[in-house]
Amino acid sequence: MTLKKFRSVCFLAMAFLVFAGSPCFAWQEDITDEVKETIQRFEIQEPRAADLFETAYGYMVFPRIEKGAAMVGGAYGEGLVYEQKKLVGKVKMTHLTLGVQIGGGSYAEVIFFDNEATMNQFRDIETVATQQAAAFGPHDTNSANISDRAGMSVFTMKNSGGFAEASAGVKKITFIPLAQ
Image (cartoon, rainbow, N blue to C red; front, side, top):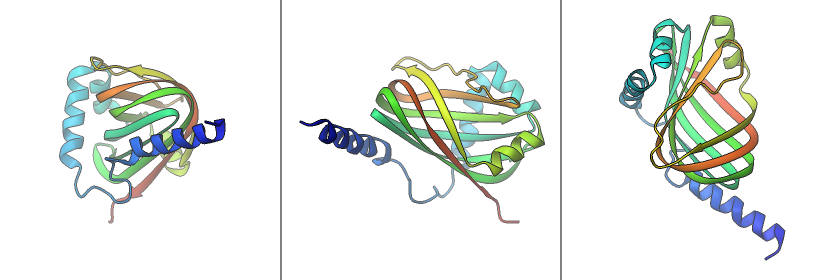
């Protein structure tokens, strides 16, 4: 098998892993209950996140991000956005990566914003370059603050699966405000 064919097979396998069970082409009808359950999980399992739900200016909650990779990786998730504890919109995220990575699974993510300016910058800039090194296995449940951006804290928590990576990529987050 040539290298070109091998890359194509890896890309197709990654696409299948990422998109097979994901609602990629339409919003889920209502993820409010999933978001509330995710917030409760973070409040119970991660005291730092529990404090931030009370003090942060705003936050995005992704109850389930599906991720898969075999050299090339991808992820997709949908969530809700809160500003000063009030629901203000929906959000969807796609993430493409390249690097040493393998596995698949699902995780929850919460992005906290310290102030209005940071939250507005994030809404206005949809595409962000990323670099990450991560691993989770069948028994991992703990989250960690993984942000290196001022004014922002990111926590993740494994839902299912196993994954290991050292990669770089591009993350696109699309914010859709609620109809007034």
